[in-house]
Amino acid sequence: MSIPIINTGDGSNLVACTHDYQVKCGNCRLNSLCLPLALESEDIEQLDSIIQRSKPLQKSNHLYREGDEFQSVFAVRSGTLKAYKTTDDGREQVTGFYFPGEIVGMDGISNNTHASSAKALETSALCEIPFASLERLSTLMPSLQRHFFQLMSREITADQQLITLLSKNSADERVAALLLSISTRNSRRKLSATAFRLPMSRVDIGNYLGLTVETVSRVFSRMQKMEVLHVDNKEIEILDIEGLRGVADIG
Figure 1 (cartoon, rainbow, N blue to C red):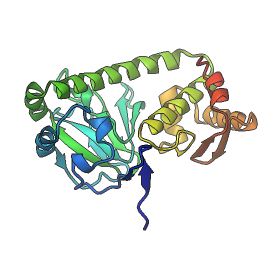
Figure 2 (figure 1 turned 180 degrees about the vertical axis):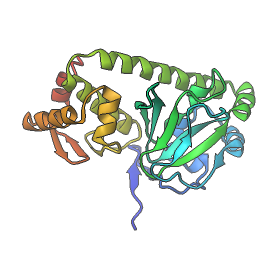
Figure 3 (figure 1 turned 180 degrees about the horizontal axis):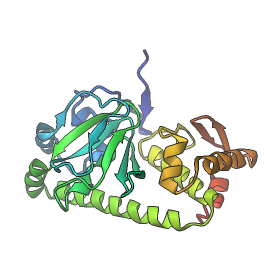
Figure 4 (figure 1 turned 90 degrees about the vertical axis):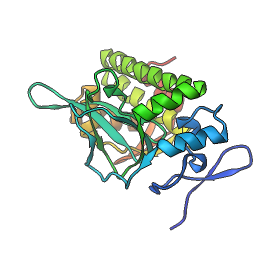
């Protein structure tokens, strides 16, 4: 099996992250996303010493469940997770998707219990960061503390964007905005912003966006007819990024 190589744009190459859970922070291609750039090598070693790495989480397995005691936050190394809450009548409400380089589990900080559940959408490797240890290190490394505050701010912004997204009247706007979000997140990881595989099902997309599965499928078909997208099951190719922005009503 060949190992994918990522060109960083500065003449050097990085080995793409696989499910090898033994890779350390200093060698991980996602460290620029997870870690503040100002950390010195010895600081990274200290952070690396508190991180716990276990075997990959298999598809459909839970990382934690709503109501579980909060002890750690988790950096997604590979794969994708979804977060969801259970409604009063027992239904699942998807509240977010987490991609490599992103932090999941911060919902438990305020009350020391997780406010949602997190489940793997595909085989996923994670770095577990015990929060008590992270707090201690943050007092010694101001740049780490600042970076974590930025991550928390990004999480709050994502929640606000979801509220704005669901306030849109058009199903086309909602689907287009989600695809643009995935495109941006892929670009941040130095992956293709225009060709990617959706790790979530149409059911999860509809649940997240407040749409029926049939509506989601019709929107994909409509965008394909408009030659904005090429859709092959879960494989997505954005043919016209500006056209997609127009559908999403983003200037």
